[in-house]
Image 1 (tube, rainbow, N blue to C red):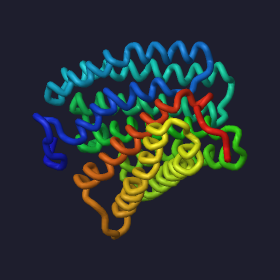
Image 2 (image 1 turned 135 degrees about the horizontal axis):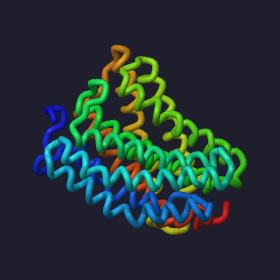
Image 3 (image 1 turned 90 degrees about the vertical axis):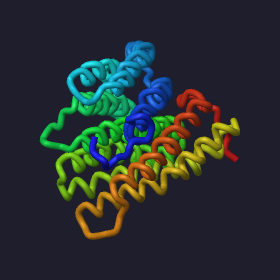
Image 4 (image 1 turned 180 degrees about the vertical axis):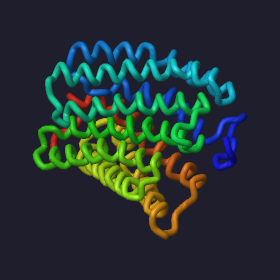
Length: 301
């Protein structure tokens, strides 16, 4: 690892720690919230939840080794765990025989989880496909764990909570699909350096995430009966505004001469706010609310 991301604890950088937070906290919280309804898909998801601690442990152990084949092979345990979760998403689509957003978005969330796990393995193995820097490989893994899995999952939960509320349901679906589309386009921009993808991806992703956050903050959180859940959702919705705007600004600055934070500052501000405020607080809020198919929401005034 170069000096772009300085060491924070032992020999772990901030980006390493964000990945570990995803492995140990974000993903286990999220897997318990995925709104699959098919019996076989839920069975597969249960298997993923059971093996998740073992997969996470293998990935954490891989950080005890310098990047190389040994670390990469050890980290494969996490990829296998995420593959089971992604299989559950495929089974859900087959069982429901539908690609409607209500089924597609949660399936995309668990699919992105496997993509993130694959890039984590590449990072731990010290591989640099297409000559990408080590930082880009690891950041791509982070991107798919947070923007890919956590943000897409929360978009799916928002759709479920607003499914019978007319225009709000339509806006939720639109926002969720922007997230689903924006995640891979943003990653492709990072990986390829394409000016078009670099700008378009974060704009689509930012618009989708901010739309979902607005709906959570204004239409869902105020109706949540449980106080701590309501506040977690409010903090999550408000806390994502700055990192999303910074992300769009950073993306535009890679193509056009506009002022923006450097990569290290982006990891510190954009990365921390997305991980600790938007993702963690959001998933804690949804966990306290309960199952999105039967949320404990108050009646409308």
